[in-house]
Amino acid sequence: MKFTKMEGCGNDYVYVDGFANKIDNPNALAEKISDRHFGVGSDGLIMINPSEVADFKMSMYNADGSEGKMCGNGIRCVAKFVYDYGMTEKEEITVETLSGIKTLQLLVEDGAVKSVRVNMGSPELIAKNVPVFSEKERVINEPLTIDGKEYGITCVSMGNPHAVTFIEDTDGLDIEKIGPKFEKNEIFPDRVNTEFIQVLDRNTVKMRVWERGSGETFACGTGACASVVAAVLNGKTDNKVTVKLLGGDLFIEYNEEENTVYMTGPARIVFTGEYDW
Image 1 (cartoon, rainbow, N blue to C red):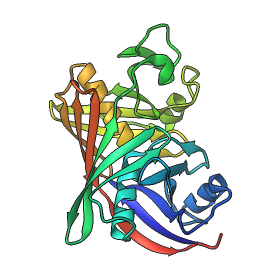
Image 2 (tube, helix red, strand yellow; image 1 turned 90 degrees about the vertical axis):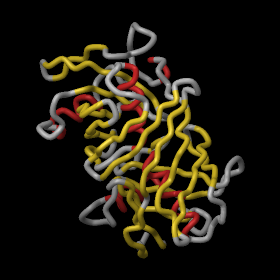
Image 3 (tube, rainbow, N blue to C red; image 1 turned 135 degrees about the vertical axis):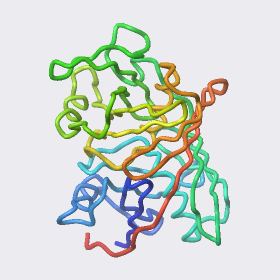
Image 4 (spheres, rainbow, N blue to C red; image 1 turned 60 degrees about the horizontal axis):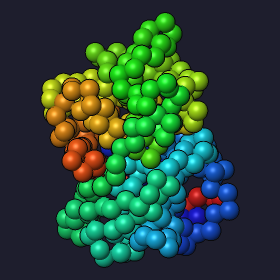
């Protein structure tokens, strides 16, 4: 099986052309190929498949084999894959995901995609739809106690569930200890991705993320989008924000009138190879 290793801000996935490869059990493949000692090593597997409703379909699987609905960094790499490998000549494409059809604008230089602007759709704030158990309709800066410490959380779905909390210092965070306790907390029936945000100024934040099924990753596109929505709702930033992640920067725009989030960021091919599956 031919594969391409790609990354967007350090959020790395193994990409496989589903037009050319028939994979019967992508969940099992994701778990094996993502292993950083016995596999290729990645945050998960992304299949690029035919779609009846869009130009392409993205099916993503986390490193533990669970299927995810959407990945912001991953979908940018899908755009680079299909353009750079000649699967499309269009510089605006649609991609079907489990969280809807996304429209992507490809920023091309010297015949290759350098960055991609993605219409990530509307943030979901209704608690039961995120989902998060709450007596309130929306969870905005609501208290959650973890290990005896109270955190204010804002819950947003960008096709997958996020809990955003604002802290003073992301560098000193023991995310390996605290991340799983957010992810598996009983108020999140589908588990949750958790973003720990340090506000630098009205247009810049630092972010660390604990992703359900994968642990800490270098970046999370949907998490960056959810974090800017949360920051705007809590009055901490303006609606155009550079999100500084461990793997690089993403530029997020939250258009409140349209209730739409746009994400712009890089996509890069790391290497290609063959995997004995």
